[in-house]
Image (cartoon, rainbow, N blue to C red; front, side):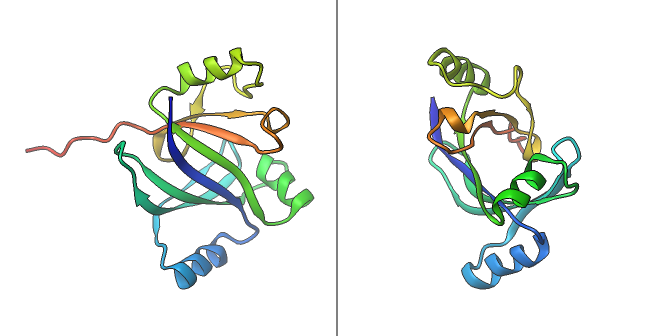
Length: 146
């Protein structure tokens, strides 16, 4: 069952300038940043709020590290802007199988590793009214040692 909006992915040409805009304009700070070599992006996750299911909602800013990456191609065609929406789920495997069973194309046969160690898959935008949709199961939160 989908539990929340996990994040909204925003494609940008210059990650540092875009982070500064969101910091200066809205007060959002970088919660996590990383380079995902497989997806060809440099990203920053800006935490917006905590959610009732223990997760959080983020803005994910994405700068391509190479022109042939999915985000690089998307930017070349569309310019900066909203790239995708991601919904949180406790079980990306079960939910993607359920959604596939409803006739929606799931882009990965098996979920892949995403930001902050999450497990992710994407749904084809042509099957989702033009919106690239991601399903995300957050990595387990480690308990602090006592």
